[in-house]
Length: 220
Image (cartoon, rainbow, N blue to C red):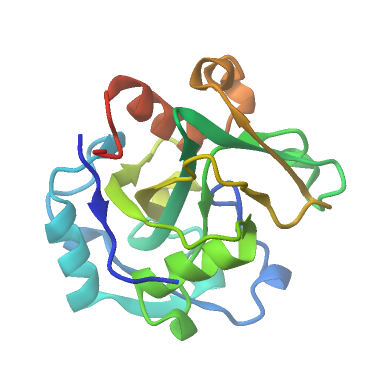
């Protein structure tokens, strides 16, 4: 499946984490009521169907609400840009180190960089580019290609977030993670990553499954 290039753009590594009040400091995040998501959310995984309609709904109906009030409210879907870096078939794999604050996440793995969209971001593109700048170490400009929507209502955290998956091709250029005190990053073969099983975060498992099923996700 060919990806779509995001318009010029500019967000926390490894996916979406459960939030605590002390970590938000009054942060307001972008979302829309679940009832306004075109086509509904009775599906799980990554899909391109309905992508344009969903993004249009966020542009028309999106609003910013306090993060602490929506993290446990599945009636409000928070939009999350989620970026995966590839290099000729290998994928940037990140492991959460034991120096991180949340012990539940120690030694968990992820292939995605993503985070909430704040008011200062000005929308999806701004949140996407900010996440890249904050989380990824790369001395080259990324070309973001939009792949599809990412949804997982099987756990309470996934039930309040809706992802937009992007791929970036490193093409042999050096790439790594910025927060090396909290994360370890390296390129790995998809079959090795799949072997991590439950140690791989749920959104990452869904995206990996999608990437392993498509022949040329970057459309190159």
